Image (tube, rainbow, N blue to C red; front, side, top):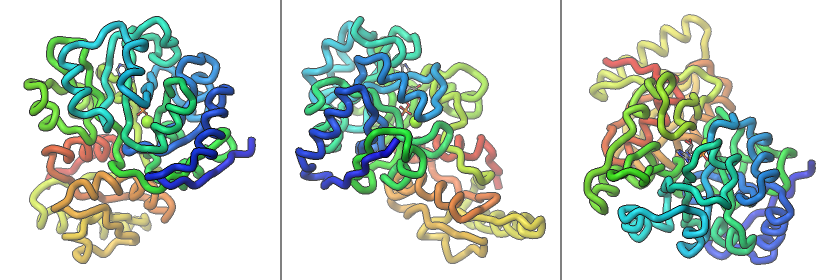
Length: 350
Ligand code: AMP
Ligand code: MG
């Protein structure tokens, strides 16, 4: 298949290109498009055959449900059985934005989207290209991240091209994304909302809006790989680069010393060593490939660059990657969740 690739201005997308993309969705095809979190791979959510194509193109396990994207709050009621009171507050506070909510599904949502579950995940994104596409297609759009399953999520169109060129009808290039980590997933079907996947909307932000918020204990550690997390996707060892990633956690000066020591040991075994450094620490290392993931004083920069950095170590042909750990506070919780998955939960405490 010849994949059409079109660049768009994310503030003012060309309506002719959006129309072309919307027609592909209406005809049952697949279009990759930017959202503020990561790039999504979209299909008509109400068409079972189109939804199945998403799983094929990504190589996604069929027991991992998809998020349905809408372009306005008015599009929500037909897709769900009812809207819980606390969900109404979260919608008013955080939509449009990087927050996905889990509702009891209505009958028009096919089970291929929900992987057989009676609940459905829904999000109203902020990105103007995403919203124009959904609005013009006039259907809700099912869209997981537009990567090959198991690879880091795409935060630039070039990542999507690397994984899906030739497998889908169209890629809309809206430049690098804003947040860089997938949306926060919150289950609002119980009395107290529960975070199933941490993301850009933090626990602290959610609690300020609705009071107590729980965290699915299965996502906090490698338990996610063996127990049954409530978001089925969390059990997969996602976000893994080809290189073996190890996280080094502790006081920063000790982390630097340990990473330099490990680097010498690995290099003695003729392994190529990549180091994931920060603005504050980059000059303290001597690896084969040192990449600054962001600024420790501005954790959002780390979130925005994390997946691109993991892909870059693969492009540079590194065998191992040594990564500094970050604080688990606020956005740090989502960063460390993704980094732990990339490392297969290999963390050295120093
Ligand atoms: P992705 O589309 O790659 O960002 O992954 C979507 C995430 O949302 C995965 O972790 C899914 O398991 C989760 N998810 C989607 N639908 C549901 C649902 N009905 N219940 C719980 N988690 C869900
Ligand atoms: Mg994904």
